[in-house]
Image 1: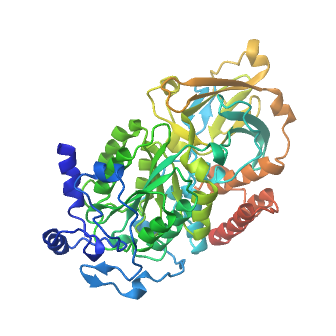
Image 2: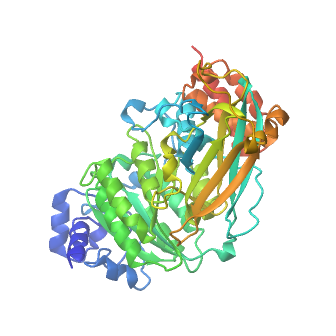
Image 3: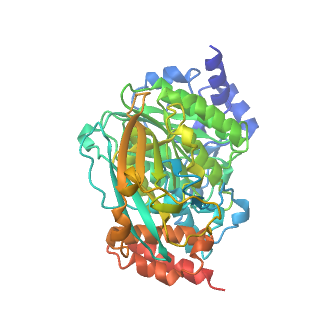
Length: 557
């Protein structure tokens, strides 16, 4: 009963256009509050006093009027809803919020032989960085995460052999282009692809920020494009609900599979008011729970600029709220939009805590890539709490560093602890990690120590470079499984200049590290990064080469 009263309090403070609340007194109260949420002119009452009832018992098919919606009882100007092509303009990164980390330090193998981290399949940093470069600006260093640059692209890793071992593991090595004394070790994972015919039913809740800060051409109009694209991929057994929030939160559309109904509801959204993001998340979880599909996909897709300023707006409080709900098998994907006031720190963290993923949408093309072409990867988890641990053999490697994954680092003891949360891999996802290592006997970044013992060369030390371990949980399971793989020391002698797929992955890593100001790449110029990537026939890879050249021109004094 208390929960119902809480949700009722949230939704009854929301203004829904066209007098759809069915109660004149409540309509007047909402008009006085100043909160604006524009919806389609659907007949009936969008906001039920008990959301769990409304979502579990969908009303009869509604009728839609595509006339201009009303705001505060007045017809909204037609021009407000006309599509405006995105205009890329320089923004003030000083008003945007990022949670950048220092570039990973060098580790002495004899002192710290083990590297442990959670996998990351987010790609938001790549698209966000592209937005800055296309606007004629270098991105803030805190906005760049090298692992998200690398994982934006797909590589030629083999398909997994068995579904119960949901990903393959690939290791290879090349000479470092910017330091011939070191080597680059690449560790690649590839998840099995889930055929569309085998995809489980999906219960999706679109949670849309319609506050005043979203009233820009590169925000709410692009949100509509992105979510309409996702709705077009629905199968008959799938369901979509729409929750919106501005100064308060409301249920716009109960669960439905009617694509025309979903499109009409999205197209009639307009922006205005403050941002009660916490209330929106609370209601979205309630709606998702009310229409929960057992053994299906239950996910909230949050579309916002992350500028929460009403109610639960403190990052720590939001993260704690989301953590309490992630064990309910309802996951959370965040889609970031816009510039100027963009809060990426919030977007990435709440997706991580919600066992989901984060992407930044800077164009209609990116919207299609993330939510149409990659929908299976985005929505359907094949392995959870995936952790990687690499133990280097001091007889073969004297020093090492991991390129990226700074905010995914775990303690060594976290690897075997199944209660420690880690990243998820979706169907078809790939994960790539690149280490730069110093072969024993070669000059490294840290000079020799006077009292350092010479490494032994007996046992595994004679033939192994490193030992790779991966720990993961299959969906619905609480006990993890383990994959182990020895990396042979012979890779060092066989390593040559990076070629093909490896060369491109290394070029992307160099791009990310240079944008981050990595001093170890200071002498490796942008022209050589572009040359390493080479000519590419794929659109995304060709675009990357152009972005490298653009970054180089912007970096010149």
